[in-house]
Amino acid sequence: MSKKHTVALDCMGGDKAPHSVIDGAQIIAKANPEIHFLLFGDSAKITPILQNCPHLKSRHTLIHTEEFISADEKPSTALRKGTKSSMRLAINAVKDGEADIAVSAGNTGALMAISKIVLRTLPSIDRPAIVTAIPNQKKTATVLLDMGANVECGPDVLFQFAVMGHAFARVVLKVEEPTIGILNVGSEDLKGSDSVKNAAILLKDSDLKDSFYGYVEGDDILKGTVDVVVTDGFTGNITLKAIEGTAKLLSSLVKEGFKSSLVSKIGYLLAGNSIRNATKTMDPRLHNGAMLVGLNGVVVKSHGGTDALGFSNAIRVAISLVENKINERITEELRVSSSITSNNDAEEKLSSHGN
Image 1 (cartoon, rainbow, N blue to C red):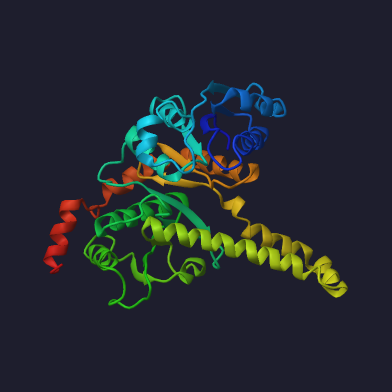
Image 2: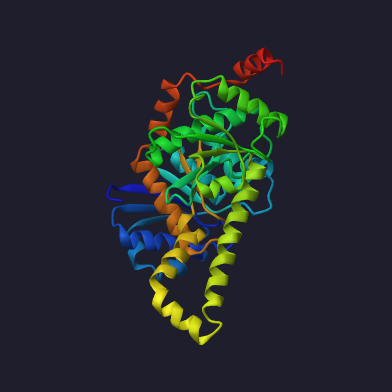
């Protein structure tokens, strides 16, 4: 991160806000003097924390608001009543050109709804999705979307996710020819819901047909069977949380195992570096930060329960996306690809297949 950017932070979103947000910004500010922060939130709660953040001293602008969106607030309510909330003001800053990026650990549904209304979607995209890259056994990463923004998705929306995921893998992961899989309960053509089956038909009948691997199952995500895994937000969110929970369990079991006996402790001393590297790879905080892809602006969602280290990584991801000109490049990917399908086009194609 070398270029100067302005980052808008929703300081009141997340289980550990505003401490995790401010302390996370402090980590980034210490590492990079070129970043300026717009801090949106309650100044009475934020100012005392800033006293212990010397690297943020001259690198922030604090915009006071006592309003915030709670974790259990409905998106419709957040849209209607949260116009002065810390989340809304952070996203407004991106729209108005005052910030390059907005980062929030707050209510996912509200963040998506407000971002879509304020920033609007990219051309030909009906619904934005939450996308991230998950480390896999091939020591690369698997792009997964959607991770919770859209609970129910028709085949046309799943198809658009595939297009955006394909572009994301090319732009962010530098994969020249990303492969795409649709998450399903089995690899056989007869399995799955109608939405999944029809999304597969659309992909097979598009310019991405050569990139379409077919159906994949849950374990294929960490195997790295394909570069992009597409699913609805309900399934994607559960999948992500299950992966994170498994990573924490394995890390805990490894640590406890090496404390169980003297021989185990000696083994830990001998293999300490390898174990620490493996544990670091499994740490969800170091992979925190998911883009709301498909918007006319960069918004990054942080895990609501993360700490300062995790939130700093979300900021780091956001800055990297802007420096890589993610939206410009995705828009170009979508423009040059004739595979993008609107709702009407999808219906016509499915009708031609007898659906």
